[in-house]
Image 1 (cartoon, rainbow, N blue to C red):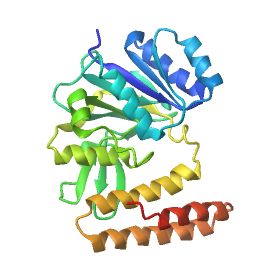
Image 2: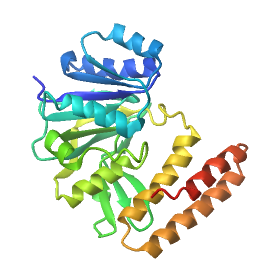
Image 3: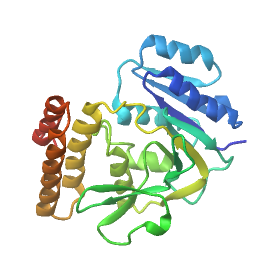
Length: 277
């Protein structure tokens, strides 16, 4: 028997979520150990999934709580009856699920493949604390050993223990969506927790399917949260400002070449002016 629970976060897109749940159950994972969080989904979408998967546990949130709020709620529910959990977003497909949760880690990443291919998207992530650059590491030999680089566990699929979750207080919900996984990992590093990767857990990630590249998420929240993260963890205030604003200037130049430049500039400006860091 599997010694952990699986938490799946869903926001509308019932057909996408059904594929995620189906992939988990098809691997022999017990339905009673699956927690599905309907994170503000429309009632008609939640009802479809509730009727299709009656044996799993359904949690209904009236309003969308963002990735952070939805994930925290689902993990908190799972940890009421277990002390280990695997978290999945509803744009992933489970390819391999070991029965045993690794004892070596408090927080770990899994092997993530790209959609529609056998190519590896990541085994773990790495952040450059000087530039704010995020890198998906496809081979652990590519990790950079320096004080400016830290590993992080991507939020699309990861394992975490109850002790780690409660010690860290879960995700910082002020991030809403994007960079929350990097922040959680950095706080885990500060607590000297055991962070790593476990490649026997394997999922395929249908990148961008949930947010559908909505610019509120991929532009405003991403850039706002990048600024918030760098302000919190950068060792140098000057370096943080230099790299962040230089990056925003490069982004503005790319937006100028886009047909949706007016809309994108609105989100760009909103991120630039947001002082809530």
